[in-house]
Image (cartoon, rainbow, N blue to C red; front, side):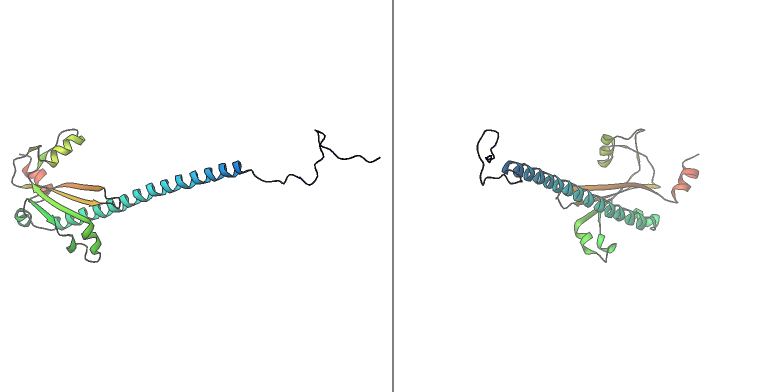
Length: 182
């Protein structure tokens, strides 16, 4: 006598063979994990692009500041003394090959008396310097020149970089070693 194949429960399974594969719940969970990974990657890429934009623009702003300092360094004392106290720098004369720079960046030059900074500069002291709240030296042979460059990034946030330098009548070396020491 032949035996009939049965399962553990004793039922015969004819034509209902289980196929190997994933259930809908497993596919849904895998899709959720992949979607979260892609979303996280996009956010990280946006942050990276923002940082790259700020770094690129900071480099350009530093080049603008350096160009203006070098231009002023080549001027005579009479030329520096004749400049107005505050003036917007014309960037189109520096960057003739790329007019986009002149549209995105704005540079201002401020010329005034040399200020005596505190021993340990802090952020509040630097803010005071920007508004002229430091003690000034009484000398007609030195000028403090501040160059401020502002721009907006692609995310429309405002950024600023500034540089403070000193210009002496006969050169800073001559002032420090002959006039400043009696």
